[in-house]
Image 1 (cartoon, rainbow, N blue to C red):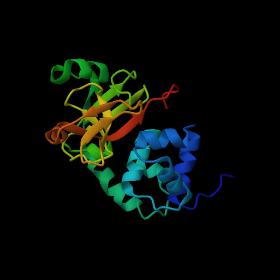
Image 2: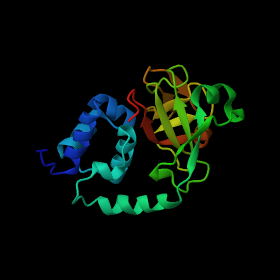
Image 3: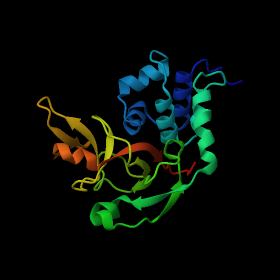
Image 4: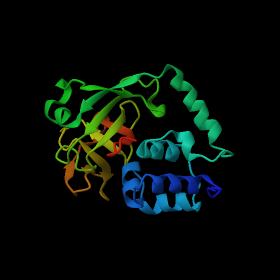
Length: 212
């Protein structure tokens, strides 16, 4: 008999363990700190709809899978899911090609549009196959990109300023200077106007070796 999962946080942990993903890796892919994700899983911090959507993308499941049957968040997620009735595919770009060809790059395929990008004009996906063009991430993932949503500090973004590295986290120094930072600690200096050319990563789909 399966143990009863009393709250959404415990369900988050259950699926992470089922997918054999460490707390550190899941937090990195989701764009939150390890400490924050730990608090979400333990129930010390309430789970928000955006946590559910991001983590569902990381674990390769639907947002509703991460919620208990009596969760107060189910109504919100179900309303968002209704938009999927007219869901379209997203154009998929190869990250390496996008980094080298920039605006001239052409899609190499299509992927299903996730909930959070339904009906978002210009939304697209990027596949990451190696560390050279996106050292902020692990190879073998697909990024879902929201080009219309304003980016804020600490967002994971597609770098459409210099295009290399292709993906980094937006940071701000104590002096107010903007820069991009990868997990390999590579820093990319930015001007204030550059922020308008950064595209927000709205979700991450991780492709595992078992294709599940």
